[in-house]
Amino acid sequence: METLPRLTPENLEFVLLSFEGPDQYSMAGGLGVRMKELGLELARQGFRTHQVFVGDPALPGEETPVPNLTLYRWSQWLSAHYPGGVYQGEEAKLVDWNEQLPSFVTSRMVKPAAAAGKLTAVLAEEWHTAYGTCQLSDRLFAERLRDKAIILWNANNVMGFDRIDWRRLDFCTQITTVSRYMKHVMWDRAVNPLVIPNGIPADRIRGADTVLAGQLKALFPGRELIFKIGRFSPDKRWNMAVQAVADRKAQGQDVAMVIRGGIEPHGAEVLAIARRRGLQVHDVQIPRDLDEAIALFGRLPQADVYNVVSFMSDELVSLFYSAADAVLANSGHEPFGLVGLEVMAAGGIVFVGSTGEDYAVPFLNSVVLDTDDPAEITIALDFLNEHPEVAARIRKDAQETARSFSWENVVQDNLIGKLEYVSRRQLVQQADEPLAAEMPAAAATPGAIPAGEAKPGALSGASPAGTPLGAAAAEPARPGKTQRDAIKTGPASQDEPPPDAAAPLTAPRDTAGPPAPPTAPPDAARPAVSPATPPADDEPSLAYGGRAAGHGLSIKPQLIPWRIPAADDPAPERESPAPAPTPRPDPRLGTPGSASEPVPGSDTPATVASPTRESDTPAPAASPTPSSGTPGPAARR
Image (cartoon, rainbow, N blue to C red):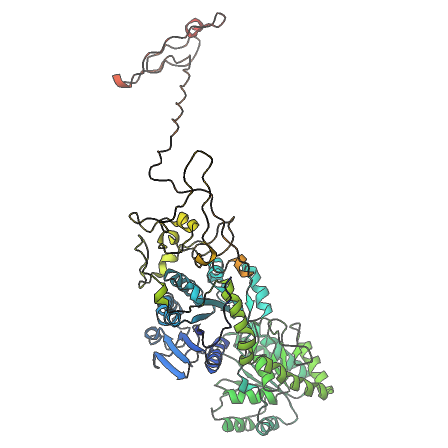
């Protein structure tokens, strides 16, 4: 198996595909933050990066904000009709994405990179891109570029899992996810993803401004300050958080809780529970200026819960991470837990759940909650108040943990290594020369899809393993094709001889014995195996994403010991069909085709002969001579 060189900016480009992106229009959650920061880090390390997302319709369709990073704002013509954000008009945008994006990425990104001798790593995110990524893999194979691209599809959450063809996706791409917890969740889908964690920018791993953090903490004198931010979703365990605050207040502790939720309906339930438990809730709209926002909290009336209903800048959020006595990121289902890592980077004390937060170690760099019981929070707060040295140690070790999860370390120590592994699994080959010199024009094949024509619905009937309909017939013959491939696919047209016609496919025919099996070409002549045709159950798996290739095994195909029939071969003899059995006449009804007499002593009426043509009347048969001891029909009557 060919060993690729170390992947570097000199031989690798990146394509990032996601609905969410760096625009405020495209930022709906943690996915947008992930894509923004990952793109910036790849560009900073020198990789040419193309980022495609559903962008703001008022901004340029193509933009290069920093060197090595190009933004492509997709579906702007649709976003102009849906100004509410990236997921407004979601289904219409999804159709536009699936129909147009595969051809765009192939012609604008993968093909130019291959012509320059570079590989392309495609990183697609979330369920919206699953179908389009499979289409991209098929398009690249149709244009003989599949072995010049490393395709990964990443799951950040379980949303939309019911809309994914998992067998096809697992065949066409390498599936990844962000934590071991998500890996185990996805086992239920019969896939085994690789784990590539999230990261945070290195410039965020610093202590907050101690002066500003001290000013913010001083605005809540003598009070225990608790902060929580996130979507109003039951998965975030908001009810557990407000119930813990209510319990602290019932214990006589003076508590101030600052929260920032979303617009989800679950927020009304959370605030109703807080009021029912006796907590005073005050809605807050804060200015964007940091100093003015801090001063505003000093003028607010006394309350137990301050519900921020306006935008909070990253600087203000980081100050609350650092100044709070506890930041509650106590989710019951968290694929990764980026908020917890951001709290650690700011030197805060975070309370996390025990799902996707692989980075959390109990009472070493965080507090890990195992249940949804509010008592777990109150007991941990009491312990930290009684042991301030533990709280100080947690803040220090938390920043060290966050430093190991910087995007710089994630890319260099994890992502590049996984890409090198996947490149072997997908049989990727380095292009040492311009691609045009090694790609002859494809022969015209009946039913083949032209290279420039996108037919997104053409593969809707693909096999579960991802094979497009007619893929074997649509593959043009090319030099270096093995005899087995020629046998399976046949010539490209009826007038064209099979590939490698100059070499005999079988041994000379003689009567000495059966024909010898064909001779396999040398390994150097073997082409990259087509990813569009899955192996049969009894074949070794050599396709892209195949199981055997995924273990780094070099498996040679077994040649089929039979030959193509020659043109001068006699037609095979066909066996004559066996004559139909002659029905035995019922002695009570007489001879078929004639009037019969009723059987004496029987209720069976006489049959009436149907009119027949002379040609249809069977010839009279000779009357059999009955044996001496067996009377014939007439004798029985």
